[in-house]
Each structure stands twice: as structure tokens, then as C-alpha cells.
Length: 349
Image 1 (cartoon, rainbow, N blue to C red):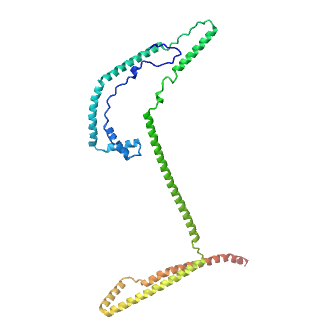
Image 2: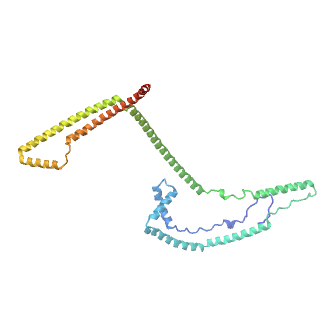
């Protein structure tokens, strides 16, 4: 192919690309490592057990399962890998010695040589602009027209050389498998987003229910507190005197009842003692002598009836002392009020 072309023609790439389009023969497949064998075997099972899990979560689960299995189970996959690895090495040697691979290597070397030679020719020659016929060189109008034609031609060539439509940018091309993978990822992300939105709605409903319960409980508490404050007993002097008299009567009745029971118990004990004395006088004398010895050895104590009487009389004495104190305080206040009235009388005297 000549390095020279017409100025108005569109720049084209190197035409002899038969060597570039030749593809290498398919090499034998590499054997899978033990973990990848185990992962391929367990993938469908884990996927069925966790349908909502993402791809990376399934990979984490299988990785944890691989770490948890025993060395004996791992040895099975390792043995299969070693066998296939030996077969792969044999097949790869045969592939390198095959006629198709040798042709591919020779074509590749020829393509490199052709590319190097074409680059050297382009660097030496470049783009040659053919001269325009200058039949009317002496005419001023033809000179201006010639300059305009050259200017337009040069700019058209520059635009053709630097136009993005000459070679398609491979970065803008998206493969079908890439689109399918992105579509699956978008579906999984949308499902995950819907799941999170449902959980958010449930949490909001639970929060609103708890809020309503708290408000209802606070309202009930406020009503109960208001009712208790309204129903609390009002204690004044008359009410206090009435309660005091009531407690005095109750204590007096309780003391009378207690005295009556003690008299009955003492009478019953005296009757039993007299009966024992009549039936067994000797035993009664011994018991009485022992009781006298105990009473002589112990210090004299007031009888239990008197102690209980004093304990029962204590609340009554306390109430009487309180009334007396109040009476004394009222007298002291009245005396303080009367003292300023007496002083002017003394001054006048």
C-alpha cells in the first residue's frame, strides 16, 4: 500500500490486518483449586438454604464451611486437583507443540515485523499534500483562490485525522454479560431496599404504639393523682380532738378486756394449783419450795400484769402529755401578748 493518498480522501487504518485478526487456538482449561471445587459443589445447596442472601454473603458462608471441614475431606479435593493438574500439564505441552499454535506464533511475529516496518515508513514519509495546479500563477484572483482551497483542504484533513468517528472508543462499549450482571445487582439492591423499608415501617409502628401507651399511662396517672389530692383527709383541731377521744376510748376498752382476761387466767391457775395441792400435797410442797428458791435467787421484778398495764398506759400518757404541752404553749403565747399591755401601766406608775 502506498503512503500517498488523495487530499480529499478519508484517512484509513492499515489495511493488511489479516495477521492481527488471527486468533490463538484455545488452550486447555486450567484445573480448579480445591477450594473452588468445594465452592462449586456447595453453591447450589447454600443458595437454596439462603435465598435472600447476596452473592458475597454466600461466598463468606462457603468460605467458613471450607475452614470448618476436616483435613480428610480437604484431602479428597486436593487429590482430584493433583490428578487434573498432571493431566493439564501434559495437555498444555501438547498444545504448545501443536501445528495451530506454531502457526499462531509465526503469524504473531510476522505481524509485529509488519507493524514495525509500517511505522518506519510513516515516520519517514508522513502525509504528503499534493500540489495544486498553478496555471494562473500570475493572476491575483487565482492566488487568493488557491490559498482558500489549501486552507480548506488542510483543515478538512486535520478534522479527519482527529475525528472521534475514525476509531470507536472501546471504553464506551458495554458487553452483554456486564449488562446482565448490573441488572441482577440492581434487582438485588432494590429487593434489599424494599426489605429495609418494610423493617423501618414496622419499627415506626412499634414506636408509635409504645408512645400511645406511655401517653395513656401518663394521663391515667395524672387523673389518679388529682383524685387522690382531692380525696385526702382534712385534719383540723376539732377532728384531732375527736380522733383523740376515740383512741382514748379504744385504749380504755382494750385495757379492760386485757384486765378481764388476766383475771380469768389467774383464777384458772389458782384453781388448778388448789386442785394439785388437794390431790398431791407432797409434790405441791416441793414445787412451791423450788419456786420460792427461784424467786429469792432472782431480783425482784414487777409482775407481768403491771408491765403490760404500763405499756398499755403509755399511749394514753403520750396523748395526755401532748395535750398538756399544747395547753402550756397556748398559755405562754397569751402571756407574751399580755406583757406589752402591762409595761405602759408600770411606766405610768
